[in-house]
Amino acid sequence: MSATRVFAARLTGCSVFDPNGDKVGRVRDIVVVYRASLAPRVIGLIVEVPGKRRVFLSIGRVTSIGSGQIITTGLINLRRFEQRGGEVRVIAELLGRKVTLADGSGEATIEDVAIEETGLGEWEVAQFFCRRPKPSGSPFGKGPTIFVRWREIQERVASAGEAQSATQLVASYADLLPADLANAMLDLSEQRMFEVAEELSDDRLADVLEEMPESEQVDILNTLDDNRAADVLDQMQPDDAADLIAHLSDERGEALLDLMEPEEAEDVRFLLSYAPDTAGGLMTTEPIIVSADATVAEGLALIRRHELAPALGAAICVTLPPYEPPTGRFLGMVHFQRMLRYPPNEKLGTLLDQNLEPVLANTSAAEVSRILASYNLVSVPVVDENHRLVGVVTIDDVLDFLLPDDWRSTDSEDNKPNPEAVTIKSSPVKGRRTAHGSFPARK
Image (cartoon, rainbow, N blue to C red; front, top):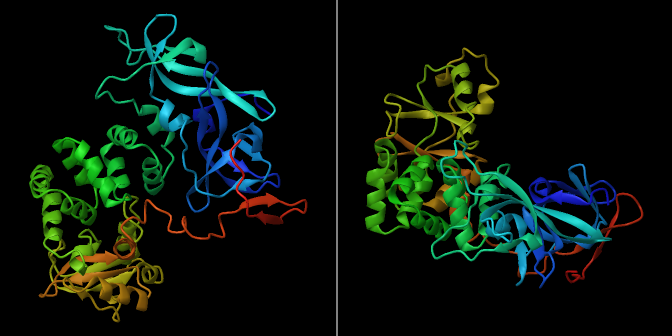
């Protein structure tokens, strides 16, 4: 081994490679099991492989840990990781846990965990990096830190209603995209998921909620007080916020709408007036809208904004004034690729797609899906009976509607024969692999 001691926070996110140098995935957690009088033993790593699947890598398969990377023997079990009884995830469950120091000096909070090699293929928890409570009257924002070994602490039983700190866990998730963070949170226990949600900023939590199944969205929102819940809804896309509010009780939904920013609440109320299986129920009310006199340079500047979703940046809507939905008469759309073919001073009104017809707000979701598929579109404009633009339906809105309700939290292939669910073993010939159908037990 190239390292005999490594801290969990540094190990998280490290790339995992097979002996041929091919990247297998990234480390997302460390799995340990408790022992009666000895330090917890490391049994393996949770590795995220392509397809966002999280699998178990036995520590015995790890040949090297060092320089920000991990080398394996090449044998990987691609069955989705499922936590077993007695197993503890270091990042998800130990970080933030309160402990009592055995020397009687008080309590501390675990902020990091070091694992140490004790023999060939054998690792155990070596040290804890802990932080004491901030002394009363201290001008510093945090308490002092200490290193302690397993035998020098006692896990403290939490009192009723006491939450475990999720600060360090959230920090370890900082590099995850919203969809990946949502998946990571869904892997946690319900209480731990709520603790992470409480620790996230409003905009980060809003992005994550948009990637979660409706049941978990509702559960998390119900743990927040009304003021914070309204702030989070303000940060969500109006169509996602409307979908979420529609699953709350009428009383809570109305209370949150009253607390939201007036402009945001108005958009959400507008969307709630449409049936969920229509273009009006699927659309977003925040497309890019300009006048016919706007230039290509102005249009490209608008779609270049970092916060704009890619599907909304694929085309610009051109209307008569006013330019907020419901707008003046809808004139047409200009696709971003078409703008790239013309000089910066070209007027967008001359570049309209003459073949793209808008749909009415009461058009069925099935018909919208057919139009997007038939004409290879990323979005389609939605108008009212007076031909005023009220929003656009994007391809991701349609996919959310068409896929099963639990598509975010389940793997539809988990209960079926799956060609991926095999172990991949590097053969002696570079670049070739052989498949083995067995699933070795954890060791």
